[in-house]
Every structure is written in structure tokens, then in C-alpha cells.
Length: 229
Image 1 (cartoon, rainbow, N blue to C red):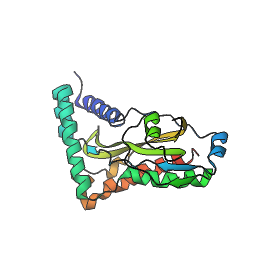
Image 2 (cartoon, helix red, strand yellow):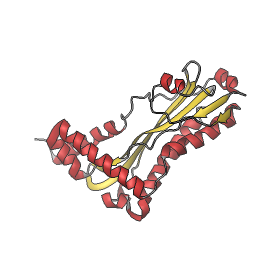
Image 3 (cartoon, rainbow, N blue to C red):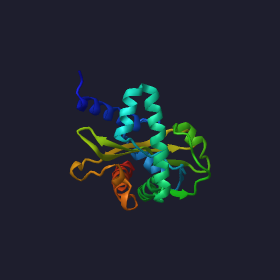
Image 4 (tube, rainbow, N blue to C red):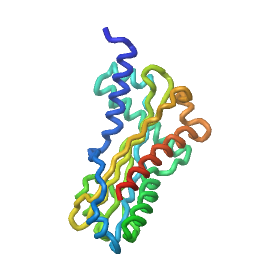
């Protein structure tokens, strides 16, 4: 018979996989070529404007229900967690992390290629490079940065204590063809078990823990993506 710890560990691993697979995106890290960098000089690029990504923290109790309820129980637990996450984001006035990614990575792209940024037009929803490029034809290139996972889970062997996972994607496309000229993927997972909060602690003090861990995750992604140019 499987031990409770083994079951908890496997459940946590399953949640991690699910949280990083919200969108079917490439996880490759490919820098821009010298030829493409040179070709961008004097050209224009825009950034995508994306909606607030889903945020969820999977409570220990919810994971237990998911284990007992199978796929249906898991779906219900996920829906409840996302709804609560949305409430917490609104309550604490947390900024859209997609905007932070786009703003900071765009600075690096402009500085390193000599391309000129132009304002986005409308909101972009698809993640497929060809579709993203087709929706942003007003510039020569389109820089697409977005969070693919923003999830809290409990430590398998420290039940009731949580960490945060932040996964992010960057893709730079040539608008006329949809060709990806650079891309990056980054995953951050907190590992400070000794100071890990309980569920309420994630959102205590104006969601200080969530904001700090999100900033760490975004910082790593911004550094990684900026180095692709």
C-alpha cells in the first residue's frame, strides 16, 4: 500500500505538470541569429497585450478531494482554486505579470537590435506563433511574452506549507511570415521550505509573499529572455 507521503509527492508532481501545461507552447531556448539581429535594425516591433493569467493555489484539502474524485474531482478542485485565485488577485490589486514581462523584455530587444517599438493594437489571445503574427501585422516583428503557469502547491513532506511556481514564455516572430526568430522558456519554483507560509500566509500583508515570489519568477524570466537578443 502506498504511503501518504508517496501519494502526496505524486499529487504535487502532477499539479506541477498541469500548471506548466496551461498553454501548448514550445519550451525551447533559442537565441536570435546574428543575421536576424542585423536585419531588425531600423525596423519596428510591437509587443502583445495579454489578459491577466490564471492564478491558483491548490490547497491540501483540495488535492485530497482530487485524489479521491479522479479526473472529475481534479477538474472541480482546479476550477475552485482558479476562482479563489482570481478573487485574491483582484483583492490585492496585483499587476498583470504579462505586462511586466513585455515591458522589460522589450527594453532589451530595442537596445540590442536597434528596432523601434510601436504600440500594440488590441488584445492577443492565441499562443501559436503564426496566429500571433497574423494578429499583429502593423509592425515588422512581434514580441510575445506571457506567463504559462502561476501556481501555488504545498510541499509534499511539509503539508500545509506552500511554494509558488512561475513559468513564462517568450517568442519573437517576423510578422510577415510568422517565423520565430528567437524564443525562451523559464520556470521558477520557490524552495525556501523553512520560511514557507501556510495558505493564509500567501495572501497575508497585502499578498506580500505572492508578490515577492512572483517578482523573483519574473526577474529570472526577464533575464533569460533578454539574453536571447
